[in-house]
Amino acid sequence: MFKNNFYVIKLKRNFIPLIFLLFTFCLLIFSNSNLPAIKSGLSLWANSVVPSLFPFFVATELLMRTNIITKLGFLLNNYMKPLFNIRGEGGFAFIMGIISGYPVGAKIASNFRKNNICSKEECERLLSFTNNSGPLFIIGTVGILMYKNTTIGILLFITHILACITVGFIFRFWKRKTVSKKYEKIDSFKSNKTKYANISNLGEVLAESITSSISTILLIGGFVVIFSSIISILKASGFLHILTNIFSPICNMLNIEPTFIQGFTTGILEITNGINTISNIACKKISINIILTSFLLGFGGISVLLQVFSITSKTDLSIKPYIYGKILHGIIAALYTFIFIHTFPIFYFDL
Image (tube, rainbow, N blue to C red; front, side, top):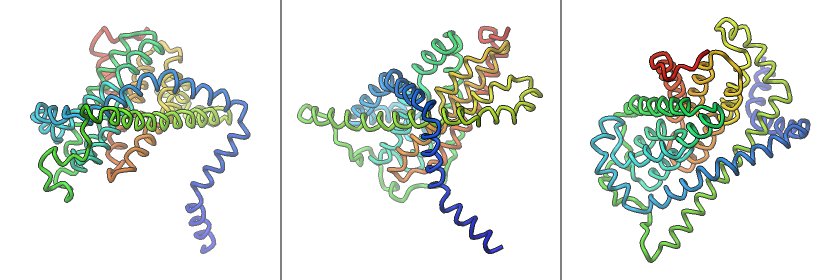
């Protein structure tokens, strides 16, 4: 009995090193399939992620160096406080999180905490609902390129935003009675430690904004490449095929194609590859494809989760509200999509 307990404890201690060792071993064993996957991941990052996100990263960094957040705070306080229990400045994270895409919302929430613009609890509430897929990705990439249908992209974007607002309202009760001791006496935006941009330091501010944005975009690129490689290993090893066989009886009971299992599993790991797989599954009931896509867009995938964790780890923010919020976002978005499809004829695409 003692020996068994000893082995269990030893396994717990060495679990992460063993996983990393297994990953390294798989990279060698499945190198033939990994190399094309890594090239594909790099291509996806260079051609899609960098052009769509990098300008937004620079723009948000620059806006953080102005008084625009203060002005938004005054304008939006009457809406943000009753809806989300967050001071008006949080409206900046909400708006930029909607128009830009992953992981801009999380980056802004973390910056707010670093600069003491919002309390710890408010920033955690922001994390739960401001880190979203942007319209460029949902309508452009998913709707037009993957589904070849702009209306599907619009439907997914509408339900995505509605679900985001719903999650934000639910999380207004997150640590409602808790106030950070560090933040209790802070009463104005003047406590912000950010260096404001002016004519004399414009070059310095621009350079710092670009440097910070490059660091973040390279981080995202690394996650895209690594997860492209992991998905390739799972496919080459036959793991995804085994998973499909295990859950096939459940899919048959629900009258769903078992091929969705592979796409959904891939999407849980990395949304772009997963949604692309799901969109290419030929199915008369295309509403199933769309609803699963809606869930994945809301959830964001483990790749995005780790990106957010790498950003928030530099602050005292908990990752828990983000995880709970994204699971809720995926479920609610899928529910809203189902309701829209079966309520409005314009969104009914089944044959």
